[in-house]
Amino acid sequence: MTETDDKELCGGRANLIALAARNPSPPVSFNRRELNEIFEVYGRKVADGEWRDYAIDQTRERAVFSIFRRTCEVPLYRIVKQPRQPRRQGSYSLVAATGLIVKRGHDLGNVLRVLDPHLRIVA
Image 1 (cartoon, rainbow, N blue to C red):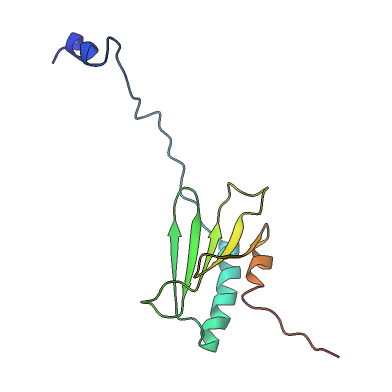
Image 2: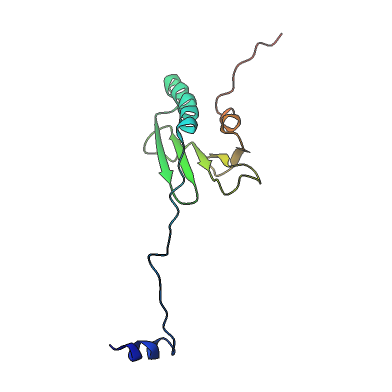
């Protein structure tokens, strides 16, 4: 095919795609501090025998930490980090197995507090 044939196929103008100009954003991930907070809660629940497995997924839009009671089941909870929503409801959300958003917030510690509430002495 010649250059004139290419122009005729494209309607008289050459359409060029610059593949090198594409700059795909890196996937969203949990940093070390966030993983430490998550694994603190996760470790206590595993020690209590409530949880047994986890999975971490990373995409360009969000990172997801899924918590399982058994490996073959659907996740009990999903901790989702979406940095594109920091001003609205917060970057972090806790999603139940039914898809219900249990808690949203800007601080991961406050979101995780729903999973592992500290006991208080009632007078």
